[in-house]
Amino acid sequence: MFRYFAATTARASSTSRLGQRVVQSRRVLTGTTRVGQIRGMSTQQNNSLSDSNVRYTIMAVAAAAGLSLFGLAGYAMFFGPGSMYPKPVRNLLREAGMAYMRPPEKQDLPKALECYEQALAQLDALGTSDSQHARDMPHVTGLVARVATVCTEMGDLDGAIEAYNDLLERLLGTDGMRDATTQVRRLLDDSLDKNERQGILRALGCANKLAETYEARGQRSKRRSAVLPHARAASTADADMAAQWYGWCLQLVMLTYQNHFNHQQLADNKPTTQTPSFDPDTLPSYFPVDIVTSLMYNAATFYSGNAQIELAEPLLQRALDLMRHGADGDETNVCRSSILMSHLANTGVMSGNLPAAERWSIDGLALAKRFPNNADCLNSFIALTYDLGVVYEASGSLESARVQYRQAAEIATSTGDDDAAKLASEAMTRLAR
Image (tube, rainbow, N blue to C red; front, side, top):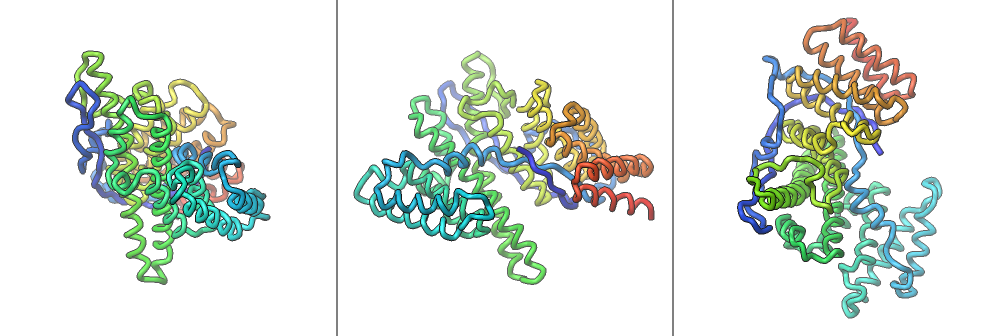
């Protein structure tokens, strides 16, 4: 699923991490990620205009975190067979479910959280003497994931962050949390037990959710900084933590992929490369395309939201490569590709690279038009139409800009997208002055 949002105005910045290569025939991890190597993933020339500091409000569509769904959603919904739990714990889980598994208007989230936490405490106490209920067992860690989910739904981001950190420590241990390369080595081991590999993938989903939650708490603190001066420092600290965990996820996925790719290159008597091909057929079987592209998307939107365009752009480009630019004709891939193109158009506007922004807008519109009844393509079409207006306005083609803004406003109004309609109307008013 995809959801819609309006993004804010632009600036540009830098710094990065990612990438390495294998230089031996056996599967061994070599090197670590370096600052600046995300840029090496970029395939696009920087044809910036002379005035690269122009700021415009941009519009984009946002994707739900597929990685989070893969890594945690089902995991947090299913703890294990009821018979695995002692009767007192089963009673608590039943009570929690009565409070939580209801329509939103009838939920009692504080009660659910209280029962889940009591059940977890009882399991942890039992786990000290009974390995069946050890703190890293799936039916125990699944309960931690549920606690994090309920905290998030309650708006208790502090509690959610505490739960996600607890979950990661249970899944990976302190050392595994500190260094993603430890997990890369394990994933590259063909003899790794299936359940252990699944545990690493759950940890990847958890780390992505932790990054998202730090990002959300930082944004909340930033909004409060106007009246609470100390909130700005808290916002900066949370943004740093979000960057750390997005980087951890990217390092895990990209180093694993690069080593896997080069191992295959060597097996086929082909030279190794510093950057894999980003052909979806070359991904490890345990990394579905939607998981990798979702992670790249999540990190890219974080970086662009913090004006780190040099990090966001190559991630969006490579995610688009993995989806083959929608060339397979699959409706989901076509519409998601158009959404990625809308973000690439935005990065072009934000960096002042209007030729690139125009190209991505036109290409994205061509895809979005293919499935006009698809909500994702429709939202993408509105955003790309508006963003093409931004490109024309910035380049001085005001009449062409008016046409684009008017079309975006009309479609947004007809589909009930009030935020997009307002943004396009404001743009037309600005040009009428």
